[in-house]
Image (tube, rainbow, N blue to C red; front, side):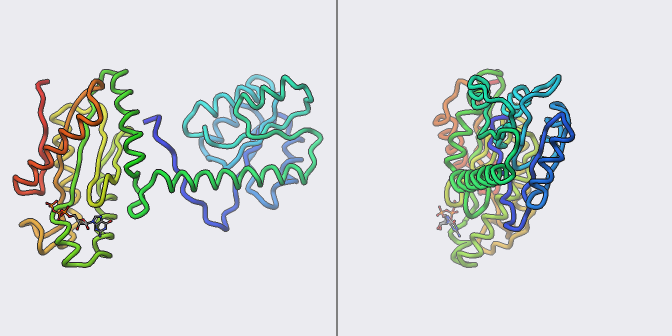
Amino acid sequence: MGSMMAFPAPAPPSARATVLVIDDQPLNIQTVYSMLSQQYEVLMATSGEAGIALCLAQQPDIVLLDLVMPEVDGMQVAARLKQDPRTAATPLIFITASTDAQEESACWQAGAVDFVSKPLNPLTLRHRVQVHLTLRRQADALQRLAYLDGLTGIPNRRYFDQQADTALALARRSGEPLTLMLGDVDFFKRYNDLYGHQAGDACLTQVAAALQAGLRRPGDFVARYGGEEFALLLPGLAQADALRLAQHLCQQVRALQLPHAAGTAAGVVSLSLGVACGDGHASVADLLARADAQLYLAKGAGRDRACLDAVAP
Ligand SMILES: Nc1nc2c(ncn2[C@@H]2O[C@H](COP(=O)(O)OP(=O)(O)OP(=O)(O)O)[C@@H](O)[C@H]2O)c(=O)[nH]1
């Protein structure tokens, strides 16, 4: 889903950051290269179009962008990078020979985090790049802390709540259905009692990974909703497909083959799932309540299964 947040993996402390320089004058690029290449990996593009393509392909940590270029100029490059969720968060610094106040304002409006003036002062350039790289890393780390579950690494409940609202808004616009599932690891209290809390934590991490691996479509979303509870959002699925997918997810968890001597008859860790299908006119609270009711039924019917709240198509 286009609205999903991107969480770049934290760079190892020793990793060199990558700087993309977009400038139509090879000589200018050479100048920037000589100022930065000792500290950073420097990628180069000599046109706006090539710069955008390189930015998408290589995901640099920061972009230095010449304002005046033929065909696609710096402003257009900035606008396109900011529009694309894959590059929207990449910091942009304009390199400009202009001292025009209007042009300066336009740089900020285009989403630049900073600009440096020609002729370049090497110390200023290096300092500005370093400051914005540090700010970006800190912002990424904060976003990960705020939206990802510390144990399993998948999205947390806060992220789910936000994503559910977005998914419903998209479903309203597209007229497509939206499925919400609630999953709960079976007899998990007994698992903790039998194997210890640490093993319980490892089990939850593996179940989270299995659920994530079981999802295939770009808008599919899974979060840790609470202790041993998971919540999923699946746009665009017909009811029968939603049930099939839920059964597949139960199978994925069984396939982990994590022994659970006090679990269901299968003798391995299993999951119960409640499934509710709606459209953009449903509310998150309604879908959650319906999925929860089905989860209760799945538990009552013997666990290790999915139950669907079928509505007339
Ligand atoms: N190891 C570990 N256990 C957790 C975590 N969060 C919740 N739990 C445990 O999950 C257990 C949930 O137990 P219950 O809600 O009684 O449900 P259950 O044993 O799974 O039984 P059913 O849901 O009826 O199949 C509790 O014992 C919690 O302590 C966690 O982060 N790590």
